[in-house]
Image (cartoon, rainbow, N blue to C red; front, side, top):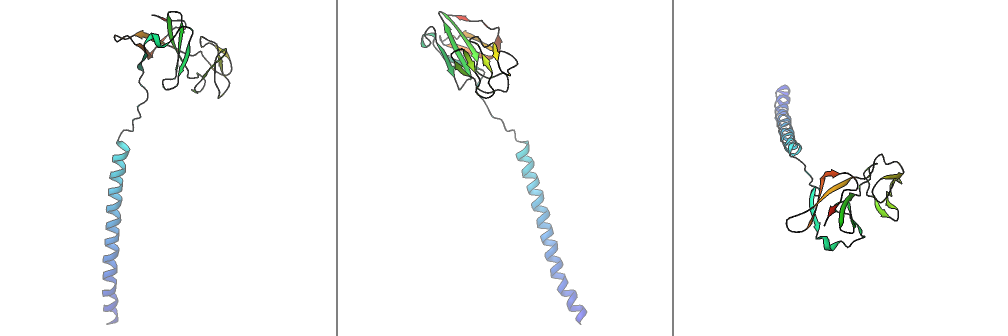
Length: 156
């Protein structure tokens, strides 16, 4: 009789272990499916648009150099000519600041002249200039996808 009792005592234990194993496997399957769905969902971060308007020409008086941090450009107006120069350092992508002599990178010490040409530091190439045009509504439009030669201005 003792053997029969131990056999009956093992039966609920086996059922419990089988049930726990089934729950564990089912939970693992559900977790795997959910993590796959999360993994395959694209994680897109939208940055600033490459084509944007910055305002009317009258908002930029002659002789100004205005940095626009959100777009990472500098608007230069000389007389009736307007240009857009990048304020992203060509060394490692830091934001350069406008200085008395041109532009200066606070991260690694790159220096640029008023036209964005490298004058010192580790920067490998000059700051790019971007295409500037007049939109139909009369505002200045900058296209960061269209680099132009340094010294290319829009006549307004």
